[in-house]
Image (cartoon, rainbow, N blue to C red):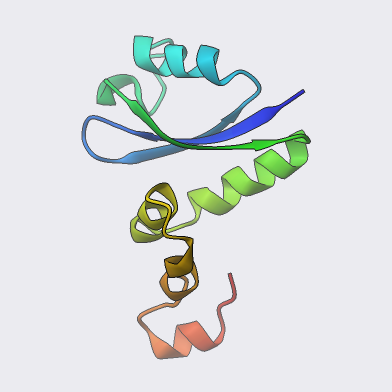
Length: 103
C-alpha cells in the first residue's frame, strides 16, 4: 500500500498538512466539506500543492508530523521545489535558540 503526505493550500492562504492511503478520496473529502469539524471545512476551496509517497505508514506519519512543525516559509520552499533553502530556514532568528535547536 502507498501512503501520501500532502499539503493543501486553503482559500484563506493557510496550509493544511495531512496523510492518507488514498489521495484522490481524501482530497475530494476536503473539497466537499466531508466533516464540519475539519480545519479545511470553512477554508474551501482547497488546492493540492504538494505530495510525497511512502511505502510504510509510520514513515508517512513521521514526515507529516515533521512538516506540521515547520514554519510557513519552510513549507513554501518545499512546495516551490527550493530544497536548497530548507537548511537556512531551519535556523531561529534568536541566536541563543539556534545553538540549541536541530532540525
